[in-house]
Image (cartoon, rainbow over all chains, first blue to last red; front, side, top):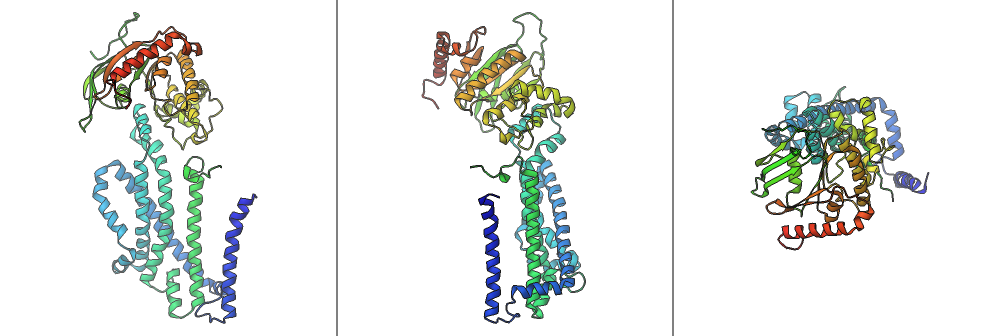
Length: 261
Length: 261
C-alpha cells in the first residue's frame, strides 16, 4: 500500500474510533444514565440481546426498500423510454411526476394509509421518492446522446431499435446509475418515514417502528441499536450502487476515473 | 432523370452534382444560396471558407444528413459514403475495435465476419494492435485515426470529411495530412473535404472551392495540379506558394476584403 492509501483509510478509521471512545468515556465518567445517552458498549449489548426482534425488523425494512427500488427502476426506466419514444407523453405526464416529487412524502403517507394496508402504504411511499430521480435521470440520459453519433447512425441507416440499443441506452447508463444512487438512498428514507407515519405493530414492523416503540418505552439503547442498523443499511445501499457504477463505468466514463497527476 | 449512369468515357458525368442548392433555416438565416458544384471521380475536392459560410452544410446535404430547401443533389450512382466529423465522435463505452465495427454492425455483419475488415482498416491508419483500447486512452490524433478507420471500414467510394483535423496540433495535423494522402492513393476514394486552412487545402486538394459567407455561396474554384507529388518538397515549391497566394486572395475577396471573422 502506498502512503496515500494508508492515509485514505487510516485517518477516517482512526477518527471514528476516537469519536466512539470519547463517547464511551463521556458516558462513564459523568455517569450518564442509559435512558438519556447509552454508551456504545451498551448499544452493542442491546443489539445482540434484542437481535431476534431487531433482525426481523431489519429484514422487513430492507425488503420494503428493495421492492420499492425495484418497482422504481422498472417504472422509471419504462416511463423514460416511453417519454423518449413519444415526446407528447412526456409533456402530458411530467406535471404529475413533478407534483409527486415536490410534495413531501410524509404529508402523503397519512392519506395512503387511508386507502391502503399499512405495508402497502409503506411500499408506495418508498416507491414514490425513489421513482422520480430514476425517471428524470434516465430521461435526461436518453436525450443526451452525442448529436454527431446520432447523425452517424442515420447515415448508416440504423433502425430505431439499434439506435436505442447501441447508442441511447449506453449514453443513458451513467445518468441512470446516478439516479439509482440517489433513488437507493431515498427508497430507504421513504420506507422509514412511512413506517413512522404508519406506526403499526406486529410481525410486519420495520426498524422505524422499533424506534418509535422504544421511544415510548424509554428503551433508549434499543432506539440507538435500531438507528445503527438503519445507518448501516443506508451505507451498504450506497456502497452497493457506487460499486455497481464503478463496475459498469470505470473503463470509459470520466466520473469513475482517477486523474493521474 | 435523377441518376445518370457513367458512360465509361473519361470526363463523363460528374459523380455528384449540386444544382441551385439553397438552404434556409427556420430562423430565416440563409445558409446557402444557389450553390452549383460538380464533384468528379477520384477528386480531392475541398470546400474552403470562413466560419459561417455554409461549407459544413454543403457536406451534410451531400450526405443527406440535412435536406436542402431548394435545388437538387444528383448522384450519378448512389455510392457508399464514409463521414468523418470535426470531433472524433467515438462511442466512449466501446473499445476501438467495436467503434470501427459499428458501420458493419449496423449493416448486420457479425463481429467474427467483420474481424478482418476492422483490423485492416485499423492497420491502414497505423493503429494495428490498438483494438482493445478505449477512446479515452488515446491521444487526439489517435482518436481521429480511429474515426477515419471507422469511415473506411465499409470501403466507401466517397469519403466526406468535415474539418477533421481542425482541433489537432500543427505537428499531428501535418502527419495526418500525409497519411491521408497515402490512404487516398491506396483506396482510390473520392474525397470531399472541408477546412478553413488555406495551407491544408492547397497541400491536399486537386480542386478547391472557395466559399463566401452570409449567404453561403460559391466564390471561386481553383485547380491544384493533380499530378504534383505531395511531399515536403511540394510544401517548399514555388508552385505551392503561388497557389497559396491565389487561394488566399480569393478567400480575402470572398470575405469582402474584410479582416477575418
